[in-house]
Length: 312
Image 1 (tube, one colour):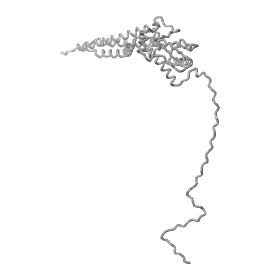
Image 2 (cartoon, one colour; image 1 turned 180 degrees about the horizontal axis):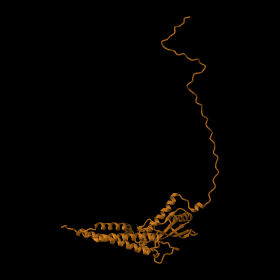
Image 3 (cartoon, one colour; image 1 turned 60 degrees about the horizontal axis):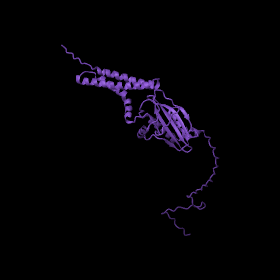
Image 4 (cartoon, rainbow, N blue to C red; image 1 turned 180 degrees about the vertical axis):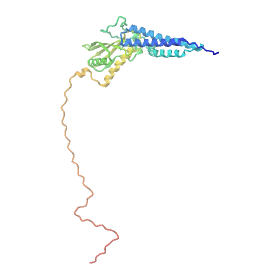
């Protein structure tokens, strides 16, 4: 008789792999539809949360299957480890953003002057978006402690020149301009625009203000998220990126549109160059022939051969 040993298979590993694949596909599809499609932001946020919870649940099911395999000796560990690996790939980005959630303060509105908040005039938000509220003293202190580098930028230029530079920087950043007000008699200009994040496609509101006079100007920014109670540092990153763009423009020495529109000054008359007198080159004489040419050639005298003197 031949004994047949039947080994049972743990089904938790298989279900873990299937769950991880399903919720990973749901996460990727949500990002694509929200970034390039018509999926609303509140629905996308809910689908993000469901996908993350499902991936964690897949890992829990895989761990339960591995425990049963360890104590019972069943098969199915390969599917369980595959489920954990797939879920880890899908949770890489959410875990990184969650670290920002715990490290940074719970703010969704950042500006360079939190104690004197700037006001939006033209931008209109959807009904389900966050309301634009002025930060209180507590939030202002939290922002100053978390982002001490977020403050006004001062330039030793006129407000009109700085505004033109800011307008060019906004266009290079790819923001959608909604309001464009150049500086008037009060020397204050403002630009209201919207910016969309690169990966997730969230839309945020941005306000840029230029104030000053003919000798110096200040640049202030306010960046506010439309959805979510935590911006995960996105607004501060946007303000830093804009200031870096302004600094790069100053370092390159690029002319603003106002400077390019100014008429060019006429060129000065070219002065005639005085010709320098050429120095006469001295004729070098050959020092080899120093004896006069009319003198007769001298006879060479060889020792040992003396001619006898002629007495007559």
